[in-house]
Image: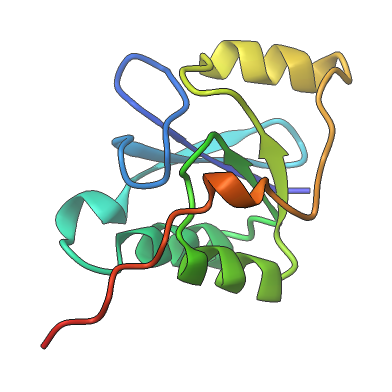
Length: 123
């Protein structure tokens, strides 16, 4: 399993549009950091970050509340992405510790109330 997680400069896991780093955590425990493409866009931000994660082999996404909008969530589900659902403001180190200790479980869905409405397309 390859895990995608977005973190800010303070090492806190954030929503897909907020953190500066898209970190890929490989099955062997190695990590690779990428600039979060969402930071460079005004539209399609969640989709761009999700695309990069998928391109880098992610099969799982760490998801605090409001990480996905309806469109990006539907895309993640169509790609069979699984989720680690976390509370807001979780430090990356707390997540990796919980993961190593088996204290967190995978899910194929996220709470509906945490999925944001997709913004209408404007031309």
